[in-house]
Length: 311
Ligand SMILES: [Zn+2]
Image (cartoon, rainbow, N blue to C red):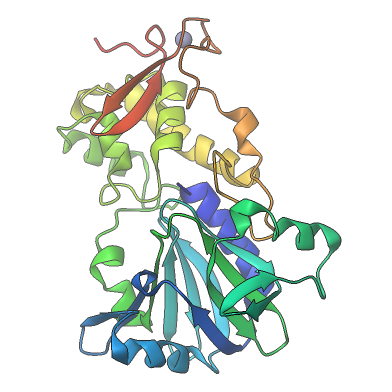
């Protein structure tokens, strides 16, 4: 699942690719993904008869004015104070490319693309296009999502940002809101396991399973520790490593564990810097003890039983 560094990479790529462009046409074929936030606070899904035509009609003619990220959402700011908030969930990602419609399905095309880009959009992982935008300058933006769990919300900026999905999010881990005192406060008010606390988007937004494991290993904190049991030193290490791990993953353009690709269809480079996630049975890079994997609330957690002690 794309986490903060992958979604940040998507947003930065999109910023370069689409800001200033005007939407000419919209297409989607998976109505469950499409959420239309109405002025009266209600919401229609894409299969609702009203939103079928409304969604495309409302987007047409709008200009992209900004692209940013909030937690694991890409926020595409549009003229008239509208916004598209896209949560890629398990396997969603954006692609700059060209497609032509054949029998109601988009097929990758190559005009105007570099050879590498044209090849990338033909890769299997990039071929699950369920949402397309055509811009007036002839360029296109595709959204590929193999598992189809992604969510695309469109509406007035104020309404979308105030929706339950976006208004309940905790502070950004790389923002100034999350300083050491703020993290200490979150820790001391959380009685649950530290691993679950890091995944709780209402406490801190944007961290998922891979980076939670990496942050805990780097901080030498066992994933099953109670969040409120961390010492001052451990809280400080956790704070520094949240910032360090996420910043370095953004620099490497994210991790491509499975489906994640950037807007050019390329894999992220953080994979080779992964220390513990997915390394069950392999030696710890600090002490050579074998990495263990356990399941906490249906999510796997990887850790070193020697470096990360429970008591
Ligand atoms: Zn170790």
